[in-house]
Amino acid sequence: MKRSYFDTLTRAARWHLPPDEAQEVLEDYAALLAEPPRSEEALREEVGDPVAAVRALVEPNHYRRWLLVFGVLTAWIMLPALSILWVPGGLPLFSVLDDFLQGLSRLLPFPVMPLLGLTVGVLLALLWFRRQGAKMGPRPRGLLPLLLLPLAGMALVWWVAGMLMLDTIRQESWYIFSSIPPDIVGLLVSGVLGWSGLAIALLGLWALVQARVADRRWAALFILCLAEVALAMAVLSLLHSLNLDGISTGWWNPFIGEYLTITLLGLIGTGVALC
Image 1 (cartoon, rainbow, N blue to C red):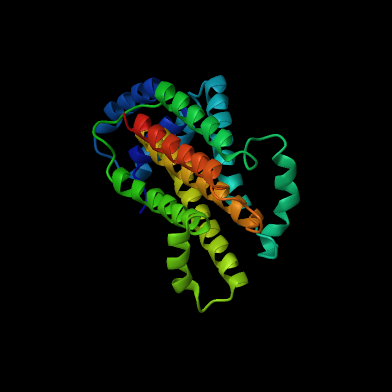
Image 2 (image 1 turned 30 degrees about the horizontal axis):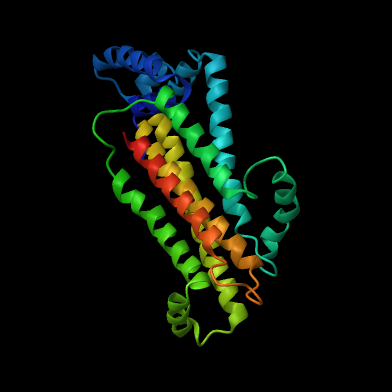
């Protein structure tokens, strides 16, 4: 559905300008557009293109800082999501990313250290949107239901972790996968977690845009999506490198600690962002 002139102006103002400046501009334009009623064509002829009108008011330094934060947070969630799609012997399309991601991992906490990467991403999102974001009245419609999607993704990842580490869950899972060859089971689990992680990452990217143009509390969804991707990356890293021969009882304790920390950090960051 095509946006109205004022809706387009609103999104452009909130994307390009700090919250206070955007609100002032929107109030001025609301008064200008209130009377007399005019068509969309007449508004564009009289007032001009809404995006161009906002761009003329942009303070370059602030906008560059926002683009830098947006670019970093976008890379922070999308690069790990793409990296977990690569599995040995898996999809050739994503195997070409491996050399690039291995090189990039020397510069960024993702994908080598998911917990450190998540911590940096959560702190950056919270610091920026707490200082440079705005609440727009009641909690945004649809935010709480959408939070259930990354929560469901995290529950799926925890089930896979339990299947690797806990005998009870592994025995129950055997009945589910008993008719599938073991090598196919690995590819199936990796594929499900990888593609679902990519879908969650795209949802998080959409939430990041919404946190800028609509309400800063959408950052809560971004943070929870980032946590889901980090958790999936950590568990898949173990799945791809695990060798059960000769390991001792309780070998999984350090991994469980890492996964719990990732989960709790994501939930705490989400709660803070909702405030």
